[in-house]
Each structure stands twice: as C-alpha cells, then as structure tokens.
Amino acid sequence: MPEEIATLAGGCFWCTEAAFKLLRGVLEVVPGYAGGHVPHPTYEEVCTGTTGHREAVQVRFDPGVLPYADLLRYFFAVHDPTSEDRQGPDVGPQYSPAIFYHSEEQKRVAEAVMRELAPLYPKPIATKLLPFTTFYPAEAYHRDYFARHPEAPYCRFVIAPKLEKARKAFKSLLRP
Image (tube, rainbow, N blue to C red; front, side, top):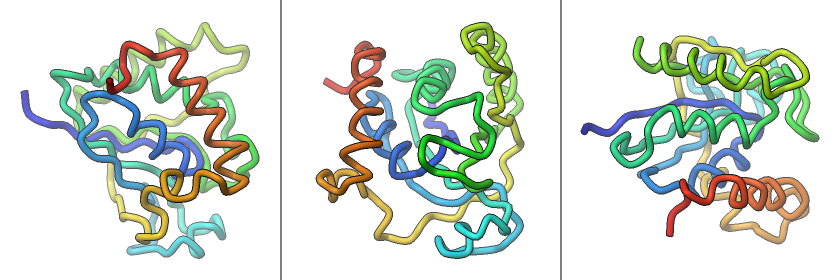
C-alpha cells in the first residue's frame, strides 16, 4: 500500500508534531503553515492572523499500518474539535482546527469519522474539512520542538499532559 500524506491543523504545531510522532505507521511529521493566501509565510506573519494560514502538520504515514480513519480519530483526541479559533492557551485564527483532505477518499473518510465522533462532544464540531491547497514547512527551529525543549514551560504544562493523555487512550496505535 503506498504512503499517504495527511495535513492537519490542531492548534500549536509543536503539540501536534509531538503527538503524531508517537504513532506506529507514521514515517514523518513536518510542522508548517497550511491553507492561507500568503506564499512562503514566516512564523511572525502567521502569528498576525492575517495570512489565512493555520499552524499545521503534514503527516506522512503508511495506511497499511495506520489507517487514515484511525489517524483522524487520534487527531480528534489530541485537539479540541469544538473550539474554532483557540486551542488551549493559544488564541487566533492560526490555531483554528482543520483537516485538509488530499483526495476524495480522504474527504469521505473524514466526513465519516466526524459523523461518528460528533455525538461524543457537548458542542458541534468546529474542525473544518477543507481541500488541501498549500503547505509551507515551518522554520527549522520549530521542528522537533518538544523533543529539543522538554523542560520549557509550554512543553511541560501544555504538550506533556496532552501526550500523556494520548498515550493512555491510544495504546494500540503507539510505537513500541
């Protein structure tokens, strides 16, 4: 089965990158900017909230090991799908959650997973389902941020608890 790419915006890309690196079948996770209208944006530009880009990750994965539906169920567990422009302490349109589908099959699977999970939330799902258009890798200093800075306050108080929750809830999907 050929590799696939998933492009997902779930708030701060330091969090989502670290979360997806835990999964078996994930071959690469690249933090970056997706869906906006400004070519080759910088972090500072995206932080203004005017570029249309969201902080996102591109996940290259083996669907024979990690089916896209399971990847999406995990994604919904590691972000707040009911919050439109906020994820935890991070506020602004650049943190708005989205699934950027790369094919009609990804769109179909995402719609099915969203229907399946919607009854589990007290509010409607705000995570957008959008066609993939653009992705620009983030600056190098954002890559592997959690792994390189585990003692930084944001990592200790925001990312680490999120990862611990994911480890407990998704043991069967984790790398050995």
